[in-house]
Length: 133
Picture (cartoon, one colour):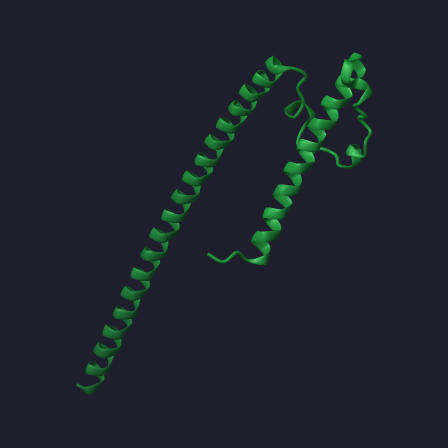
């Protein structure tokens, strides 16, 4: 399957957003380590050029300070994903219903148009035959 330039651009943008979000998470964690007075804080420099890109999603959805917060955040994001999937399924069902209604409406219009054409042809034939009499 050949990807178009538009598809490649979209994929690049998605990867860039993911990188920016991961970058933001890392900056936040480095800042947290530095402010705690952690023994590694002398090695950690939170402003090591990592603050160039803002997050593409909400701060609350990205950051965590420990494993417990990470697990809570994971559960929160799973719930948001489920909600988004339900909304997507609902929208797909609405689209399919509207599409089916449109197909039925078009079919009914086509049938009515064909019936009208047949009726016009019959009336012309009757008119012609009555003129001949």
